[in-house]
Amino acid sequence: MGSSSVQKYNEDDLPAYTPMPWSLKEIRAAIPAKFFVRDTRRGLLYLARDLLLATVAWSLAAYIDPFFKQSSTRAALSPIGAEVSRWAAWGVYWWFQGLIFTGIWVIGHECGHGAFSDHKWVNDIIGFITHSFLWTPYFSWKISHHRHHSNHASMERDEVYVPKTRSDLGIPAHHDGLDYEEILGDTPIYTLYMLIRQQVLAFPAYLLFNVSGQKTYPKWTNHFDPNSILFTKAQRNAVIMSNLGIAAMVWGVSYSSSIWGASEVTKFYGIPWLCVSHWFIMITYLHHTDPVMPHYRGKEWNFQRGAAATVDRPVLGWQGRFLLHDVAHFHVIHHFFPKMPFYHGPEATQHLKAFIGDHYVTSDVPAFKALWQNYNRCQFVENEGDVLFYRDRKGQAVRRPADEYRVKSKAQ
Image (cartoon, rainbow, N blue to C red; front, side, top):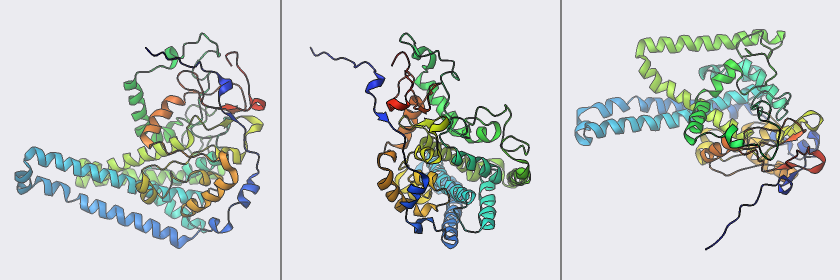
């Protein structure tokens, strides 16, 4: 008979992390200047390609129901076989149109950063149209997203994916007798339900109710109130313009439904939009939520440390690179230099990696597996300390701050 022993968790044995020492100026000097050049014509060609792909996919989808409902097809496949094939074809359409729409959303995201063109008016016109089409209040989101980039990984000032603390979850102070499973334990079915809810509703919930946003904001903070704490008085008109864009979409969808029917609008447009929401949340969640990445408080935070607290992931392989414009594959360089066009990301990342070394984080864990793992592993951070790492449902971390940044608990 063999015997096995489980090594007791000891935080002293975890890999120690020391925040990066370089200034942003030093890091930028390591990236060739040519990668910061924005090419309006090139950006417009990418947008035209996306619009063409969306049009082709939409046009092909128009043949799905007529083809599978005709008598010859039903005779060849049987009624049940034809119906199964029909919905399978719609599934293929939703998958690819959802990715194409997400790529169009990424173009709007580029515009919001000023990375699409040197001309502000080009950025704002294209960004406003593409984001409004996909139910994103362009100017309002642009403002809060800029603040996110300016303060990423700061516990006090970041705008989104701000970790919950031990006290936020009502978890008592760290001690040996604490039963984390009783406090944080969920059944896999319930965890799956919560994860699906996040994927479907998180982005609308963030825009409407500040869910996952900065906890210090008032209760009814949202992206549609011109007087919200998110905006200054000078930004009020921009918020109103964003709202008009969303109002136009409400009218457009309502009018289209009155002509073609709500079910047709849902099949051609609604479900692909839900896919956009899913991919956007999945990708950004995995960019900013991982047990190996730090969050900071107080003086230990600076822009470049926050920018490095993101992770590159090869989400969906070639589909992610081609249809999503590398938004998942090369996100770290984007956080360092948001105005750098996405098409320079692959080459610029190589220079960034060479300079910051182990502070560059990438993961090749399959996206859906990583989503499940990180949703379970990233539960909370400690109330104290200026360099923090997520703890899991057992209260355990996979990394710790170096000794000079560490606040020891009694259990450590």
